[in-house]
Structure formats: structure tokens, C-alpha cells
Image (cartoon, rainbow, N blue to C red; front, top):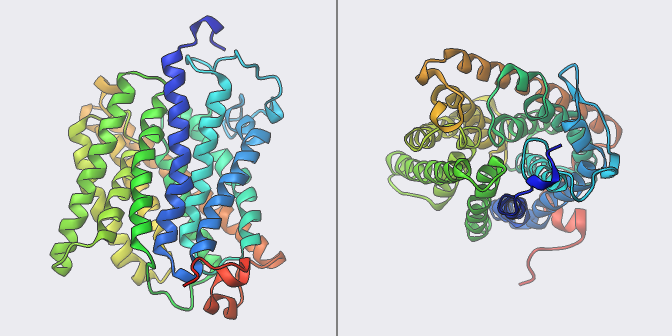
Length: 407
């Protein structure tokens, strides 16, 4: 560990704030974003999925998740567990090669684990049992998120291979998007598959909070109050803004009218795509990433989903899975050595693009296969889908005996 005398109060203050910002992304950001896009009979259940995802992840992370993720690697696949329940980590201990407390790094990373599993819920709204979801969250974090986070960030085999993922393109977005696809493969489609957002105002507020919190997500991943954080901050904002504009223009071209749903979907797609690249690329590259990712996610939502017939209710795979993949690929193209030493294809290192593709394939395959197995086991043991009557009447009243509105 870094000597105690090297603690930097400015860096520590920034990561404290960044941690709070990433929490805002899940609660209330994602809860409002997904809740507003769901049907009014399922709004509370949809928010419940984000709430419980955050709470379960927070407990698992300090109990053993952090230790298995960031412990000394065992064969490149999992960390050696130490400091269960954070025992042995003192107040004055600093995280390795940084100027922030180890305890702060633990809780910062906990918010990443929490939002990753919460993102999956967007695909399953309106048809998954609340109890099954809670068990799924615990199993998925343990068996999928922790190993993948170790591979990429914790000194595992993809880290040693040289995969670039500044703030979670593969670990968070590709991982959650692919997991969502695997889960809904087992869960099956809704009876009524129409997207009928009951309160787009909620969704707009949620998207704005996601955008706001994303600065902690990406700029906080610099782990210091420095120029790299500033670069991640501005590339994040630029990509999101460019993607929003591009989606609006695409809506106008396709339908003749801009939509608020399209605007916020575009912004989130841009935020997703820039996540792996924010600390590796310059501002012009962030414009390209934001603009081009819109076409990838738009294709997935408008053409791929109807063609293949999977019921990704709120497009967790279409936005997070596809834009996360695209962002990881373009990180291998645009990584600029003037920003963070790593060079991509554009700067004479085509091997980086190959490494990025290897990391995408590895994460996608592992996430899909293990998530599918978890879902099948839960379905065979406790059942994961509500009955038809509950789905028709709504999960709020039947799963929780509550309603979102009394009018």
C-alpha cells in the first residue's frame, strides 16, 4: 500500500463525491428512468428491482465481492480472498498506487457493481417474480460480475493482456446487456409487448440524473482530481450530447418528428459508448463515438429485436449491450497515447483493437452462459416468472400489494 503520508485530500474529496454521483445513477436515476418507461401497473415493481439490486450488491460487495475481485489473482481468473467484511483494512490504509483511502475505493467500486446488476432489470420488467429477482441478483453478482471485474480491473487475464476499459464498457455495460439477453431467453416474452411509457417525465428526470451521475462514473475512474479526470468529464459530456442530437435527427429522418424518448435514449447510448474510452481518447474521438453508437443501438432496437423476437422490454441489451460493445471497439481504435499512454489503431497499434475484440468475446460468452445457467436453475427450483393473471393485472398490486397512484 502507498504510504500514509501520500494521502491527498483533494483526490479523496473528489472520489467521495464521485461515489455519491454513481449512487445517484442507480437511486434515483435508473429507478426513475426505467420506472417512467414501464406501465403504470408496474412502476413500483420496476423501481423495486433497482432498489433491491443496489442494496444486495452493497452488502455482498463488502462481505466478499471486493475481496474476490481485487485480491491477488489466482490464475488470472479470480482474486485470492482476504479481508472478509473488510476486516484488517484500517482507516489510514491507502489503495495501491493511489492517494485515496482503501475504504473509499471499496465503496466506489460497490456502486459500480450495484448499477451493473440493476441495469439488467430493464429487460425483465413486468414479468419476473420479485423474490426470484433478489436471489438472481445475489447469484449473478457472485458468479458473473465478480469474476469479470477481476479479469478486467483486478489484475486478471484480460488486464494482463492489455484490455482497455476505463470505467466499465465491458465490465458494466456489455456484461449487463448480455446478461439481460440471457435472462429473458429463459424468462420468455411478455403477453403484451408494446412499449407504453406511463410517465415520460419520470424517465427524463431519470436520464438527467444518469447523465449527472455519469461524471462520477467516468471522471471518478481517474481516481484523482487531475487532468485525466477533466478529460474523462469532457469526453463523457460531449459523447452524450452528440448522441442525443444524432438520435433526434434519426427520429426526424425516420418518422418526421423528434421524440423525447428518442432524445434520452440517444443520450444514454452515448454515455454507455464513451464509458470504456473516456480516459483514453480525446474530444474529437468522443464526438465520433457518440455519433456512431446511435446507429448501432438504433439498429438493435428497431431491427434486430423484432427480427430475432427477444423481448428486451426497456432495451437493456439494445442500449447497454450494443453501445457498450461499440465503445469498447472504438477504444481500441482511438486510444490516444497523449491522453493515457495507451495507443489504438489510429495511433499505430492495431494489436489494441484485437485485444479489445478478445475481451468483448470473452466477457459476452461468459456472461451469457453463466447467466443462462443461473436463470435455468432458478426457474426449475423456485420459478422466475409471475403467473399470467398477475402479469395482466400488474405486479405492483400482486407482488407488493401496493399501487403507484391513487386517483
